[in-house]
Image (cartoon, rainbow, N blue to C red):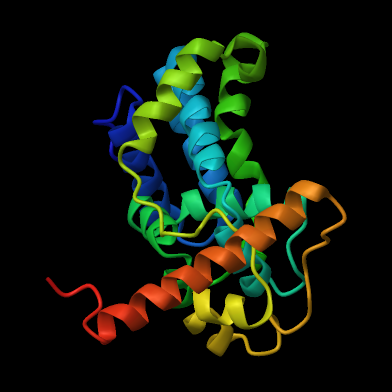
Length: 228
């Protein structure tokens, strides 16, 4: 066991994830126990930090383009709660996989899926350790101003794929996630978004406009339209 990590920050957070993956592989129950044990040994403050960083990375991954990828990867689709568990699973794959998925969700075609890409307990590791140490909940102890600052700090390390903020279906989805759609040809054909809400319809329409504009830009570049 690597005991050199004694304080949790954005770098040692990923170091602890890597340590747990090296020790436990794809055994998610073992990974939870490993992480919990390490955090308990570090104390309540570090358990709180781990919890806050986990929640921040989950929030930063709340992107419809990534949700589309989860819908394809997960065998039975991806509900609201399912997307939370998917993002927790994504974090458990380590820094490189997490950042690559936000830079291009289609990169997940190269990642081995397991456990239906769902890791609910990963969201609560810091909470479990903190509660064991103090009897209190991390959710009640999180300082909102400090948390907002943390989110801003972590976001600086993330490069998002252009258009990742929009949901897609049909041809637009295949264009956005070509490798995933090719790998799972039966999972992207059926509609999976419910556009009853006005905001959802607006986002879907904005995504279609965005993708059309990107196609036009590529065509112009191909014809020398932007050559200077």
